[in-house]
Length: 75
Image (cartoon, rainbow, N blue to C red):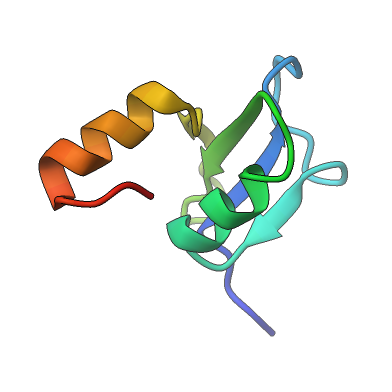
């Protein structure tokens, strides 16, 4: 069974929907899927099943600029 670290869903959804989101294996997978859909939110999925998912980031020009600054390349 795969382990998911991230999930994506439309940013307009105010809460995490475990049945309506798309699960991703890593942050790069999440960014690749978000490129095809506008205005998405990436959620971090904790390893502890008792913990709640958290809003991680929106894959937009701002987060891409930060990735360029920190990692030397855009996501």
